[in-house]
Image 1 (cartoon, rainbow, N blue to C red):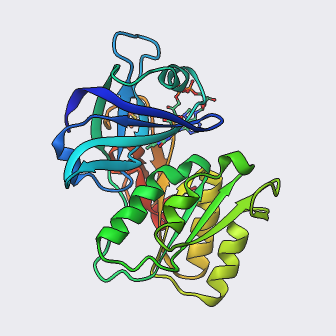
Image 2: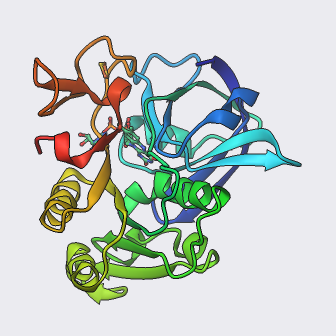
Length: 265
Ligand SMILES: Cc1cc2nc3c(=O)[nH]c(=O)nc-3n(C[C@H](O)[C@H](O)[C@H](O)COP(=O)(O)OP(=O)(O)OC[C@H]3O[C@@H](n4cnc5c(N)ncnc54)[C@H](O)[C@@H]3O)c2cc1C
Ligand code: FES
């Protein structure tokens, strides 16, 4: 897990408040899996003191050799505001890849992908990995939800792979009006996928986990939380689970991806 000084390769604003940044990285990221994350810290700045976690959105390859990684992020506070002002060729402190990603089981044929808002960041990497594993993505459903149209991201990354994109916004400004779980429930009434993969706010993950359990479908959720050390030392990211003797696991070390059936939401 290398800690390195990374150079910003490119930096684009893709929508109001959302940016994509390309960062140089160690060749070992070739082994990174979808759902793993990195932590970033501005070099020479004490504020914020703690490193900030971001999912790997994409591994950038040049002739099959890793040349960087991409992060998709939303500006919400001090660090992400500072990050949004950084320019190509500036450097930043990068640590990763960290945590455990989604499980890509052999023989998997019918996955369903569910992402709420910025939770789509690792789901694009996941779709790419499923495709690389030889899974036929044509018609595979991805459910994207957000409060409003500006929270709907990366539709093209899925539609270009032939996936069936279902969009829901709470205010109806894009796609179907309502909650993302509504079209998911309709889909599951007539289809039996092998697994549901999901990332987004905890309320969404809880709802998706309940629906998956009701249909007896395996489900993996990537939980985002506020982290302190990011290395399994401080218990700042504890999640209550059913399978550990003390009842808690670390999101940064044991996750962020968990089998939904062990998580106590
Ligand atoms: C495993 C993991 C992967 C993540 N991947 C991404 C990603 O790919 N793209 C992305 O944009 N963000 C991602 N996040 C969230 C990201 O880490 C935070 O948005 C970031 O740390 C905020 O830092 P800040 O200094 O800008 O904001 P702060 O000043 O620290 O916080 C601003 C506001 O956002 C809230 N907040 C901070 N972190 C979170 C969080 N994780 N969930 C909900 N609310 C939060 C705070 O309570 C506060 O109200 C991820 C988090 C985790 C744990
Ligand atoms: S953030 Fe410190 S243990 Fe996870």
